[in-house]
Each structure stands twice: as structure tokens, then as C-alpha cells.
Length: 269
Image 1 (cartoon, rainbow, N blue to C red):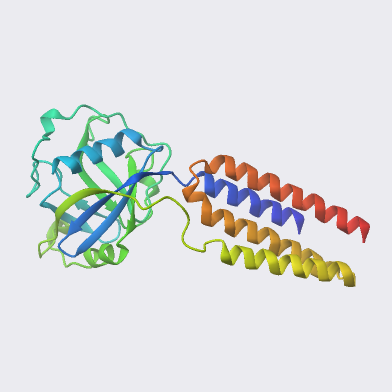
Image 2 (tube, helix red, strand yellow; image 1 turned 45 degrees about the horizontal axis):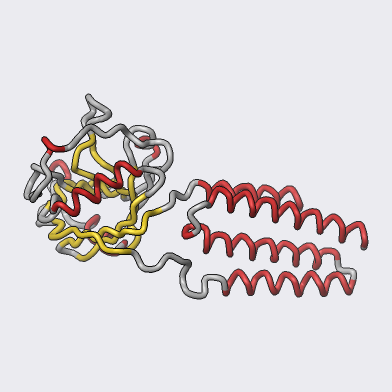
């Protein structure tokens, strides 16, 4: 059982390390179907996230149409100079080249990624896509700079809009307005600690009962529940911690300590 638990600890640590940290700002894409709230990757793609914020603040996406819907992969949002997108202060001629930041954030459901010129990897455009599926083939080629945080039902509604040839929507789908707002105070959801605490508490109770009655299986299962409680607590708090890699190592160290305690109790029994 101990190798299985150790494997779970390692996988949980790696998963946490792969979750990109998001910045404090939130971008609201107010479509004619409802709002999509977007969080930006502060560390994984800082330059592209900053470019997107600048474009939003300039009004570049006010009136931008969703000009293509590929229900199996992504929706495409027009940038400056395309189908109804209008910019107040920013135009393609003012945009400097932007080297890709492709190594940290994967392309999965809800991810935002910039379009770019296939002939010039540093020529990031202003059009972007919102992913509707996991597309590993885009990792390392395009820069994922943020993710949808709220409004998934709106995303699914847009996915279902009828399209014509080339994925062009039959009815108008557009970002009526895009704007930046501050995120709520950083922190885990209210009472996010409650379920992990209950799991860990039940595990501690079962472990103590098993120790008193010499039930080794109960003791081992109790320790397993305690460890699961730690995993759930970490999963609830890690996205807001900002240093998930270090927390992942801390969790792994705590798991090793629990395994040492298990060995101690088994020898003492």
C-alpha cells in the first residue's frame, strides 16, 4: 500500500506544479450571449497576458466578432482589423513582435491562445481562440495566456450556435464589450477546508481506533484517509498560493513523514 500512496503523492505534487498562477486582474468578455470571465497567466505567459490587457484596455475587442466556431476544438475571436473589431488606440502597425511563451501552459478546455503568423513565430496577432477541447498539438507552437474562469455555460451556448461553410456562425456572435476588473480578494472558496478536515478527522479517528483494538487494516486505512485529507486541502488552496511547486514539495515531504509514521506503528504493533 505504501508504494501506491507514495505514487499518489508524487502525482498530486506534479499536477499542482503544472497549474499556472493567474494574475489579480480579470478580463470580462461581454458577448451577446453573456459574460466570459478570463484569468490571465501571470508567470507562464507574462508578455502575452500584458499584451492582451493592453488590447482590452484600448478597446480593441469592443465589437469583435466570433468569426469561426469549431465545436470540436475552439472558437475564434476577431482581432484588430477583422470583421467588426474596432480599436481606439491600438492598431497592428503599433504592435511589436512578441516571442512565443510556449513552455508552461497547456491548451485545454477554456484556455485562451493568441493567433500568429505561421511564417513568423514572433509575429503574434491580435485574434485569439478559446479552446473547447484538449489540443496537445498546439502546445509548444502557440502561447496559452489565460483561461476562462467563469461563464462556461455561455461558452457551451456559443459552441452550439449553428454554422455554415468554414465554421462561420449563421447568426451574429460577438464580444460587445471587453473590460478589465479587479479580481476578488485572493483566497480559496469559502469553507474550502471543511471537507478535507472532515476526511482527515475521520481518518485520525479510524487510525486511533485501529491502534487501540490492534486492527492493522483499520489503522492503515485511517492513515490513508488522513493523507487524502491533506491532498484535498492542498488541491483547494494551491491555485491561490502562487508558489505551488514549493507547496508540492512540502506536501511530498509531509507524505514521506506519514509513511515513516506508518512504518513505526506497524513495527510497534
